[in-house]
Length: 191
Image 1 (cartoon, rainbow, N blue to C red):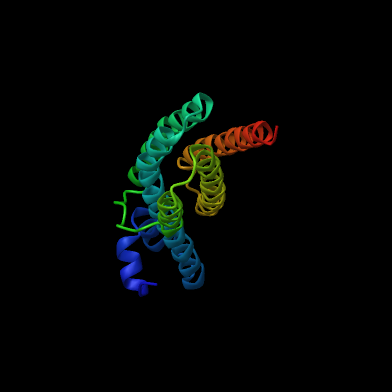
Image 2 (cartoon, rainbow, N blue to C red):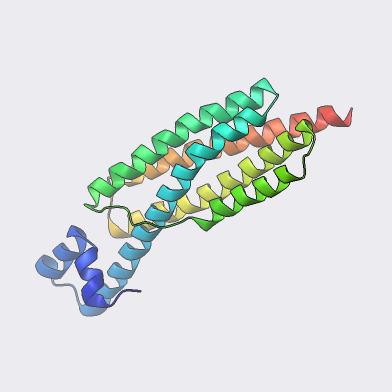
């Protein structure tokens, strides 16, 4: 974590307001700086994740031979592009620039996919793998957006909350749809 003077310098107008206008006691200020830094850090992490997913989702759609799976992945790619715009809007609200920060969870899922692909699986196995990886990604994103909503509530960042909630709702819907498709296709394969 950055020293207090560097954290204050990089955390933007909210911290300056608390420091200069409200004169919060030092410990409350430190707690808010920590929460604010946590929020910005996770916001940057999700920004990287969503940007990566705008590249990965079309790849997964091209791998799928099933029209419903392909359509679901392409639809979620469009939603993911909106997620990126929502996060950019939050950065503007916070008067922040995104830090260059790699989301290793999404990078790991992509690496896992690429390793599986090297095994030259049958197309049906690849599609099931892709649906499972898609579900894993959605659940990671849902956890992150829940954390961002909590942090934004704690910091009074009311303008960001609806943007995080919109992203969260779309992640939940995508997870449900991908899970349903995986279940249906596994049932068909068992027959």
